[in-house]
Amino acid sequence: MKKRPKLARGVAVVGAGMSTFGMFKEKDSKDLFAEAFRELRASVDRGVDPREIEALYLGNFSNDFFAHQAHWAPLIADLTGLVPKPATRTEGACASSALAFREGVIAIASGLYDVVLVGGVEEMSKRSTEEVAEGLALANTPYAGRVGFTFPGVFGAVATAYFARYGASREHLMNVTIKSHNNAPLNPKAQFPLTIRNIMTTKSESVKRKDLTAPDWPTEKAFLGDVAVNPIVAWPLHLFDCCPISDGASAMLLVAEELAGEFTDDPIYVAGIGQGSGRGLHRSLDLTSFEATRYAAKEAYSMSGLGPEDIQFCEVHDCFSIAEIVHVEDLGFFEPGEGYKAIADGATRLDGPKPVNTSGGLKCKGHPVGATGVSQLYEVWTQLKGKAGKRQIPHGDLRVGAAHNLGGTGGTCTFTILERR
Amino acid sequence: MEGPLLSDIAYNRFIAEERLTGARCRNCGARWIPPRPICVACYSSNLEWIDVNGKGKLAAFTCIHIPPPSMAAQGYDRKNPYCVGVVELDDGGRVDARIEGVDPTNPESITIGMPMKVKFLHRTVNGKAESYLAFEPA
Figure 1 (spheres, rainbow over the protein chains, first blue to last red):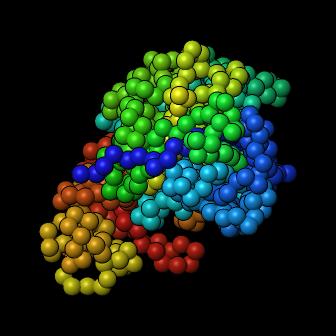
Figure 2 (spheres, rainbow over the protein chains, first blue to last red):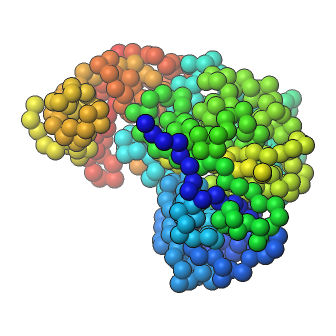
Figure 3 (cartoon, rainbow over the protein chains, first blue to last red):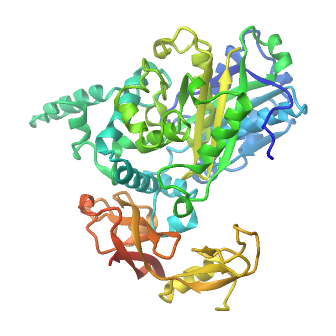
């Protein structure tokens, strides 16, 4: 019988930082990581001397392709003054930095290190949209890639299967988009800090300035249903169902639990970590579920002794709107086929019973793929510390939050639970 | 049938010859489409090539308006989208395939569960002969 997964030694998060996400002509990966690292240092209550850091784990999917430069771990170790200490790059497509976090936790739990820097970086916007699509699709299976499936295409196919099985429709995808856009303006680091209403007003005014008849969208859903402003990318997914192309970096400082008090009076602890692998679209056991997510969640729940009902809020990997619906079911928050109904009822809003993607999610916060996993944990940490400002979850006693990160088309998934004790 | 290594290279070569193939485990009988060199039901490496009945049902699909470079080179774009999908084979297993004989500009006319039959596409892409697995309504 498989024994219950556990860490041999507890691990705490004592600092976190992330760059603003967006498309930056004047910033490269080092500039972005420097931004995240500076914020991390400032966030450690009693400070951290970088010389105390013993190792770096860095998530990066494909700066080799996007920025024509490989081998990023030593470059970032040099940037942050860690050389000659070990620096290791982790690659799990869009889950690359969640793997870095997990490797950092394992390294401390093993007793090898006491203080570890983890993070991620990706610099995508200097390539054209077509090139970025090609670069991302390298993380597809060869069978899907060969017949022309793009990333949005794979998730579009998941959506058609989900719609047919459970009776959901495009309107339910729109609920996810509208909710993410409602949270984003509250996040100063978000790439698109705009509600759908804000975007409607801007579009209307720009048309009026050209002396054309302004389109009249009575509702946000009418706007999202207008293909002139929300064109199809991969049916049934439209532009506003898809995350953007982004540049960004994220970083976290992990320490052995018994040393946490040297850095802060208010550590956040790693309660559970899980990671799973998937088979690719054609061999998935269920076209409306990601097996790797379910495996990762089971591991993390088992390690923490917690269940889906204990997770007070969660960041999930909403690379596409349909993905958020599938994930909230795979993570056990809602039964299969019930996720889209719960979202329609407002369950995942910032002020709902199970807030999801308070950061604005990948959709609005941005998705520099290698930086995303740790940036999701940054959001969880920030909420648990009560430092989320205008987007702080209005819940008196926030103790347990989690982040779900998905790589490729579900080939690599992680689930990480953080808690305040 | 005896044949080459149970590889994707050979699988794609068979598609060029208009054959949909897979592997059958001689130890436990499990079937794998596309073929695999190791049976992951019993972990035997004693597998053989099989020809697969090209009939099935559409299990999932999408119509792609923003193509990757390989599809753009075949003339697809926003005005000329293409359909790809997952087909559940009558004999078991699923494959990713191009979906032909449907109208990608009218995705609501395409339905999950539609009976499909195999078709092989032969195209010249950037001066090179390529063959692709496809299905069309049966």
